[in-house]
Image 1 (cartoon, one colour):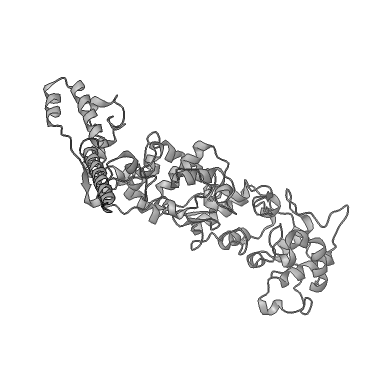
Image 2 (image 1 turned 120 degrees about the horizontal axis):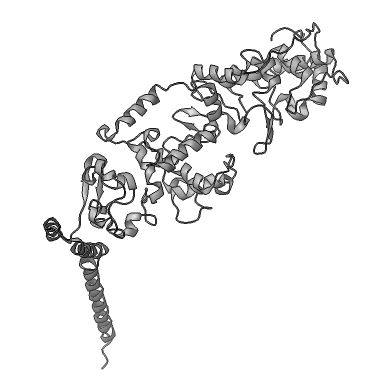
Length: 494
């Protein structure tokens, strides 16, 4: 009679033997063939070759094949990197292959491993015992091991990057230089100063890959790969990105990436901070005002260029004013530029730069105002007009001659928004009339009164001005029909 359980008993026996074999293999691998043990045996062989004196023989005799780690409670770190990097402080192995080689440079002289550990500078998963897990690019770990050329980003944790020798942090130094030269602060805030078109960059280095869109990034999916690709071509990484292409080389993109990684406000004990870092924190609280030219180059050139001519902005489909143009600075009222800088142009790409917005100090706004006006000649006297304008007729003239560039109601066109409340507040009647009459040199704004052929007469200009002033009225007043109230006379202030 056949035993129906015979097959299952054999199946159980075979499964048990396979399980025991796997357990035995795992035990051998864990206790003898583990990667870190293989590395330590290789290092021990290197020590035997390098032993040439009593001290060397003593170190060899004390070397043990065992797991090693450093615990840094102040930094919340437990690093086992020294399990494989046994020779990081041994000058005899400077020519050995990794991971046995001595740590490059003399950083360990002032940054001993037993006080700083490894991951505070290199990142990575410090508790790991295999290189793949320590690198942590393909495992769930917030901060994978930094590539060697980007490790200097961590120096900013305890040091002021601008005080470090440039030959020790070349990428970080170049990143700081590019940030200013490319006028990144025109769109981004850093340390409470900058524009608002883009996100603030404070603590950008603390971001993990889970906070970034990796769809168009090639693996490995790390924050630095995302940053580098984004600097090369923002629109290809973030759909509908408003960021202009900074037109940088790959090396420059890497430098800017290092700068972004360095922006990490890590909470480390003050005993770890270098004196220059303490000074930096003090300067952040009590900054030294920049000169007008420094302010302009760091926060204005991304949009305005050198400011002497009007630019067509392909990204936003509009003209950018020539803020240093002779026609503007010669005829603009004294407070016109200052008001526009301090309050911005609401509803446009021009942000407010006052102390509670863009973070510029009053002295800096004054300095950049003087920089914009530097070298400008005084505008020649303009014949005054005593005509009263008709805003209803002015509307018709505006639609015919002005709305094509300035937009309906003076907003939303490709030219500056003259219906903007800040413009209406800062621009005097004389300034507007002068601009309509004479135009703006090196811009798309034509002169409407030319000796050879005037497009608009004095009465026409008075009518247009009357209509323009209705654009600055409040909502209740703007509901009135143009022409229902007497417009202001030309030549007076609004």
